[in-house]
Length: 407
Image (cartoon, rainbow, N blue to C red):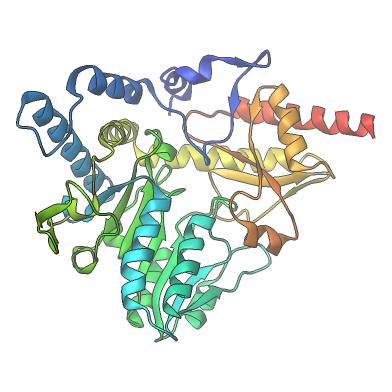
């Protein structure tokens, strides 16, 4: 992959921060946007801005075509069987909440089980906590190993005939490890449970085939894959989406409205009440075009190689602790340096133009598992280079020296 030319497509990367060239290593939180996506949004607002599915005028027709075209692109991107299985949401969080609030609360009863793992992002934990409280279901956790991962054997022991829903991340936003979601789906289906996959961290880096994984629901966000913020996707198998009730009611999602009762549109529109996220969906379509033009296999190879390079280089820094396992890790490195608090570390790194994440990464149970209140995280994407890693190391060594001098 010609990373140097790809970087030129991202205007934000050309700036200086605190007098240093920007080294952006926080793509796991939100990826930067290429000029193609920015121009697509600009084009929509300058030429096609109108509501969808309503007006028969030219602008409304163009906006509707672009909006529904983005749905078709998203379906193709994850190999959904039908475009109607693609629901546009505000992001992964909204998608998981939709399944937890509509599906889980309808099928779960007292004594049933909802299974997750303790490595999950809060967005794939809190909705299930609330669903369990509302229904009397038991929230169970797949036990973690010392390195924060879980084994397929542990999943098999945790999922039972009482389990109604299993929800796990495809790739961990802290560990960068890929979970065996296909095998988990097979185990869950054997017990009559459905599987929800949090794909927020996987969708930017690897090819996803929801039919091959045989998951029942899959959620992801546009802003982590070079698309706009505020747009995401919930994929669901048609049979489950058709039996689910909407959780937002209003214009656009209705078929007939009477004074005391109403009926809903067919899929996918019954879940998209009100004016939808039109520009966001169209921008997501442009991001999909961009990633497909480069090739997800090329992006995956680049991100794996760069992560391996970062791990090997960071091993050379004394008193630096990395969390998780090296096997299968890519896209990010989570770590702590000496006794420096991660927020202090990130603040000093920013003075060198290096942007990383610091905190609990919306994974407080996993932080507790490691005995850490917070960690630092450097995450990589298609526009990052080995030079970015070297700048990170240079800044880490300078930061360590600075804190030792002021002690």
